[in-house]
Amino acid sequence: MTVATILKTKGNNIVTANVGESVADTAVLLAKYKIGAVLVLDKTGKVTGVLSERDIVRALATSGSGCLNQNVEDLMTKDVICCAPSDTIDEVMALMTDRRIRHLPVMDGSELKGFISIGDVVKRRISDVEQEAAAMRDYIATG
Image (cartoon, rainbow, N blue to C red; front, side):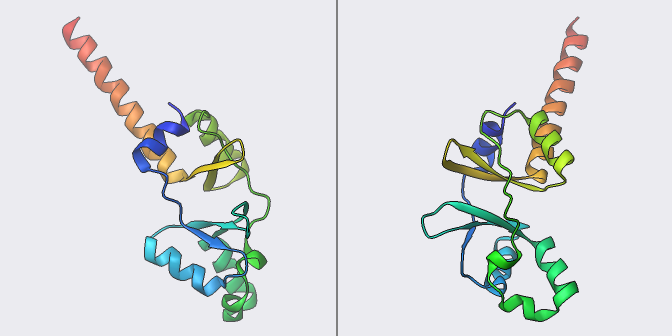
């Protein structure tokens, strides 16, 4: 199974923030859509970062509530790691585990195709394992 399979189920609706927007406004987006991170885009629509709940909590812990008035680019992760629709679930799980990241933009060349979370990946992997187990049970029962 590939990342494209996840996107077929999940869809490719992506919640984004723009460079220059406040952290407070972006926190409202996270709460509204019940998500853990947003992609941050520049004026041309290019991905420039990822801002997560964790980024905001860390800033609150170190700087206090004043960080909510900062721009998203002040807190976002700028070294954005991406995956491709053709990447396998196992490859993406390994990447997320090794790099300790929970969200990955899905890029097909320079085109943004989606945004997946570790929850999306685990959900898909569990579904695959359940299907494999059911197929084995059917095979044993008919054999």
